[in-house]
Structures are given as C-alpha cells and as structure tokens.
Length: 205
Image (cartoon, rainbow, N blue to C red; front, side):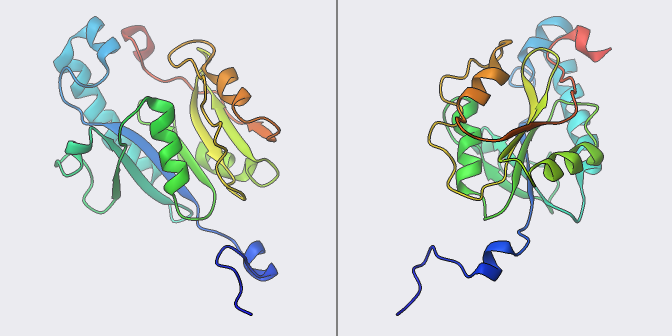
C-alpha cells in the first residue's frame, strides 16, 4: 500500500532539515520606511540609515548553516536594485505584521525557521546560531527587545504552524512579546539574547 504523502520514515523524521533565516525588509524609500525615526531626523536621513543598515546586516548574516531569505514589502518592490541579486526574495503580502510573518512560517520549506527584523544594528551570526540551537529542545524561540517586543521569533516546525500564532498581538506596544507567547499555548518557548531595534532617534545611540 502506498505511504500517505504526509507520512515519513523514522530515518526521514530524524534527518537534519535545512534552516531558514528570513529578514523582514521594507523598501528603503523616503516616507515609506522607519516613519517614527523619520519624524525625528527627516524622511531622507531615515531612509539612508535603513538602506545602509540593511546592507551591513545582510552581509553579516550570510552563513552556510542556513538559507538567508528576504521578505519584501511592498510586494511591488520585489525587484528593485536595493536587494542583493543572489538572495531569494519573497513578497510579504498583505495584512498586519503578524499575518505577514505567519505567512512566511506557513509557506517555508520543512525545517526550523527564524524571522528577524532588519532594524537591529547589534544582530550578528552568533545571535542567530544561539536561536537555532534553542529550537532543539524548544518549540519556539524569541529574542526579546528592551521595549517589550522582540527582534527574532523562530519555530522548530515539527508540526503545522499553529493557527493561533500572533492572534491578538498588540504590535508596537510593551505587550507584543507576551501577547505572542500567549498565541502559542502549550509550546515550549526559549528566550535568547536581548537586543534593541531602532524606532526613534534616541535608539541610534
């Protein structure tokens, strides 16, 4: 009798699966990116900062231990010149941040997936390595930010992505991390390094 399509042999279930690191990016255009920062320093300087921050970050995060992917917003910016030509690009699609990140988890190939923001100057490969390692014993991993949010979320993806993921998360508030954890009932959640993102001019320090 043929094996069901979603069944796997014991060897296949325990075989290492490719890791994927997804960076959520916005086209670095004045007035369309880092709007809170732009209120403090202007739209052109904010876009300039984001463009150079993104270039530095993508260089740092290249590593043979995972596939580096960029998820682009708006979708129409998928083919602009700002993105490295050799990296796989995917559209973020519509919806709020939670809906867009959930889409990346649900459509990614089998294996652990971590999603990060592009506006975290201190993010290095070592931080990503620790996050993927945490997914060994844990179902999910979060990289906390000092403001109550987080710079990274990862899922081991040994089962289907929960339908509740990101439900009722209050984005851009001090409740974002705890709300996200509440959207993963029963999951074993690990925490890794605390890193700050850049939202306002004071964060640039």
